[in-house]
Length: 235
Image (cartoon, rainbow, N blue to C red; front, top):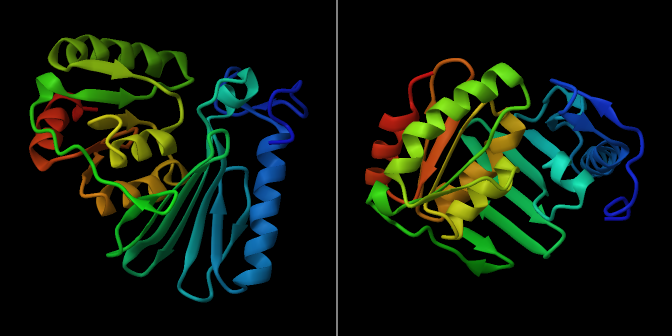
């Protein structure tokens, strides 16, 4: 938060000139990495800004230190820290923290999902035509063009579209019932690992989007997921 709302420091680009990284991302990742090294030695780690450690314990942490960097740099209040813990059975723990509000979304496998320690549930909506659907767009021009074409098919079929710009938070919006569904291609594991578990533990369903680039569809009910997947599932 000490970086938020002030001129950006240490700017660099990643997938394109408009996909940025800053010292805020790097510093947040350093803090998380050093805490995990101290508290959970032997666990593996993979993080967006390059931190990596091989697991000796059978567990791996998946970290996005600042999901929604462009929002952060613009002062737009839709960004978060996303941390998941994987074991041999998948994601065991997921946490997404929005420090602006502040809101802490969390889930433990087979233990339910919470927002600031209060239980949350998906909407359970089944009708695509009445669904509020969140999505996200790539920072690569060619892929954005394809996403725009897809949006022309999706928008007439749903209640409305929202694009907050941070996939980890988008998934938590599904879990908390603030939107009915979410889809996006081009995600990395650190974008969706924690949020996926939070949706599932809130009673929702998540399915991978096959093909290249990969992605996910999440919804509050199997019926809604099936209809949305049929609409957006083709690569």
